[in-house]
Amino acid sequence: MTAFREITMGNLVRETVSRFPENDALIFPETGLRLSYRELLSRCTDVAKGFMALGVKKGDHVSVWTTNIPEWVYLQAGLGMIGAVLVTVNTNYKTNELEYILNQSDSTTLVIMEGYRDTNFYAITREVIPELDSSEPGKIEASKLPLLRNVVFIGDRKETPGMFSFDAVTALGKKISDEELAEREKAVQVHDVLNMQYTSGTTGFPKGVMLTHYNIINNARMVGDVMGMTEKDRLLIQVPVFHCFGCVMSTLNCMVHGSTMVLVEAFDPLKALKYIEQEKCTAINGVPTMFIAILGHEDFSAYSTKSLRTGIMAGAPCPVDTMNQVRDIMHCPEIVIAFGQTESSPVMTMTRRDDPVELRVSTVGRLLPDIEGKIVDPGTGEDLPCNVQGEIVTRSSCVMKGYYKMPEDTKKAIDKNGWLHTGDLGTVDGNGYFKVTGRIKEMIIRGGENIYPREIEEFLRKNQKVRDVYVVGIPDKKYGEQVLAAVILKPGTTASHDEFISFCQGKIARHKIPRYWEFVDSVPMTASGKVQKFKMVEQYARKYGS
Image (cartoon, rainbow, N blue to C red; front, side, top):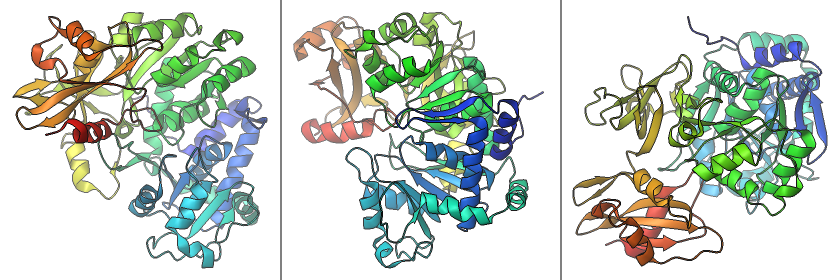
């Protein structure tokens, strides 16, 4: 008997409100905003009615380009109530990428804020849609974006030609009755698409992953169950909400379990420490680099993190030292590891809260309930036995509906038997614990020898001077590819190529020892903390490639 629930976003939020109406639902410390679940429902229904009044129909695509702000949460629930599809837009995108997303997704509406870091969303939007200057709000006719009709601006600008203000949209919603909203909600089905999450683009141009109410609500439920989340928990949300780590494993996780969302607009280690102490957070999600930055902050000892209990570390391998420090120094003993991908909504496996540290740093855990997974031969598709490396595949009701308008890519990703091919290499042991050993596309072929970067990276991380390291293949006329290691050293240390070559000799096979060494301060990453190895290859191929 499956434990999967058949419930839509609108019904989920209302159910949680009925159980915990006065529980803290959303806290945004930067502005002092504090909402109970009852108050959050009111904000979400105002947004739902507003976008109905704007003309957004069931199945319409609404692109949202903001950081972690309260309005994103209102939109996540409000658009779900009316059967619209929230299309995520990466906060690092520029003009070409925004135009691509709006076109590829067939968005009828775009919601933006002023900007983030060095990216001015407002200016970029006007550049992509020059017709805004001569358009009335709601009547955009853009030559490059024929389906786009509305742009909604969140912020304090007095004049936004061609755009609605967010407040004006919610004001429009006052003419929509409760009965009209209820009627719309009845038309929404659990297997309708709820979110379109664009892949991070670590291996190329993004694809629109269609995720349903059924997909992500159930994934969020299982993730929170493994964490032991209840209405008493308070989760610090510092991972980007445009990514599944933010909007499924964090915000939706809280909505399912009645927990409190403590929202941080963008990752900042000092703010994380302040808000953990101030709001007595019991849970924290992040990629390893976030935890490393928090632990290494000069003011770490000035703040108390003793309220912490659990959290998720995902997106990259967790160093042993970091795991031990998070458990012992950050007082977060039940921290767990999660593995998956956007196409599986996203989590497939997790370690458990009582797993020994060794399993939490050397594996990505066991399958979630009602999730299938196995290892297959990448060439033949045949099942492989325990502890034999192959491709990790998964099958469940969490697997995406498909890539939007990309049927051939969907067929390549999901085979005729419903197995999603992750592209990740790994093994599974006799107890069902999976290990990720690399990416099929990242595999380096040097002189006919298959080399897996993850294996070399894990070995090099044993060097006491290494804070982090990433290995890629560089084109080479003689061997096909050569191995390059980009090493991030620990603060205050120096090293040489020869020193690292000596460290490798006699410990790993000669053909695996990197031919090229780069000592760097950082590597290209997506906003969600994933390393963009294809950019590293492009960069170093120009320098070393032959």
